[in-house]
Image 1 (cartoon, protein in one colour):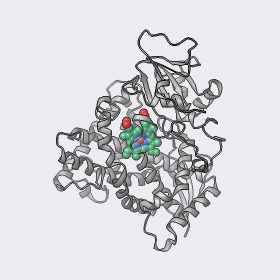
Image 2 (image 1 turned 60 degrees about the vertical axis):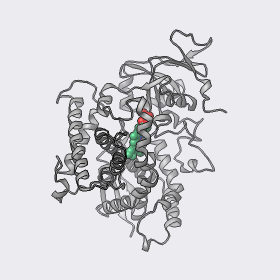
Image 3 (image 1 turned 90 degrees about the horizontal axis):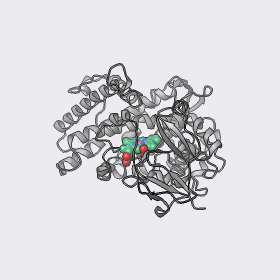
Image 4 (image 1 turned 135 degrees about the horizontal axis):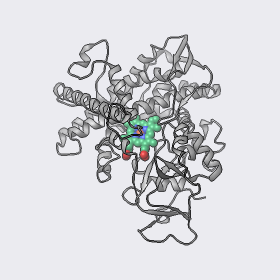
Length: 470
Ligand code: HEM
């Protein structure tokens, strides 16, 4: 069975051109309350409609007709239309929060900007982040009091923040040391986190009224304050570190700017990338790590398998000093387990693309003016893509089973806008969960409640019981 589309199979219709005879449109009449049902529980919404209408169906989302797609060929079509038949289609409030320097703006500059940013989040530099990631996570886990209860999401977020701020911005923020905030317009980590929270909430404000009474208005104000903070961090860095060593994301950008002052890396672009990549990474990685810890707790045999793999890779624990990049690459079963968490609990929905032309694929018409949504919450539960999708089975991602093909499994999106931080997210999650497996046994305290939208994540008040293994 062919699951991916050849580009010539996608028929792009010019304005006024009729589709071939027999072409049908996607099923389901969009309903005015679809947006509310989706936001309340995207998983349930996708599952119910998949059962009733199949993997391609129409909905109403923020007043527009959306075509949700889950089958591989349609997903591939949705991911790869940039500059040909689609453009990014995010609500206006969201576009303002991203701002003009995000990769979702300016399709003409997208490839150049993405290629320039990639070395700071992948490859050699990513390997160089590993020792610090180990240290910060091991230090953070020492504060988890054992035996005891911890609020899972906030506890993971606290550590992720201390890992990601230095990796991305090159600053270590210690509340107890006022020097770390010298010259910066904020004076505590809590202030920075609170601004990010207000900024985050602004993305999903429904009203575009610029006022302190709206989430959008407050979000934009927080954005300005965060840009001021990033600007000050960069200025301080430039003053104290003329060599711009490339051991963090900001250092990489400043070094590129020095080499090519007329290139991609203007000051404004750098400030915005600091703002956006910290935003993208902090919430997504925290959601993934906490969902992983929650989910594997129900499968003791998976935990045992993970620990056996760890023992094979790092051997005797007595001289253990952290996981190397090579160790991480060898953790094949851990990677499969992370993927299985991403399959069942994908933190975010993906591509939202406006059709600038009508397109026909496999006898179905996708009309100009509709928005295509490639939905992992549909694709990841389709028996055509995954054997017994309701079962938690990390083995499905091992080469022997080979499930999780491109366009069937896409927690990180795909095509031209595929996530730039996917490798970093997996690497940080591997280090984090490896340390947790080494240090603790843990038990759930009942079923967790999840926040469903915009990111799926465990609610703040959900606790787990931990006990130190030594
Ligand atoms: C579990 C972790 C993460 C998940 C689930 C995730 C998910 C996604 C998804 C679904 C997209 C595609 C959006 C679309 O096509 O509309 C995306 C894009 C993106 N992500 Fe991630 N992400 C994660 C971590 C990160 C990290 C750690 C970074 C950076 C440090 C990052 C940076 C980006 C960027 C820059 C894009 C836009 C790429 C482009 O437009 O070409 N993400 N991410």
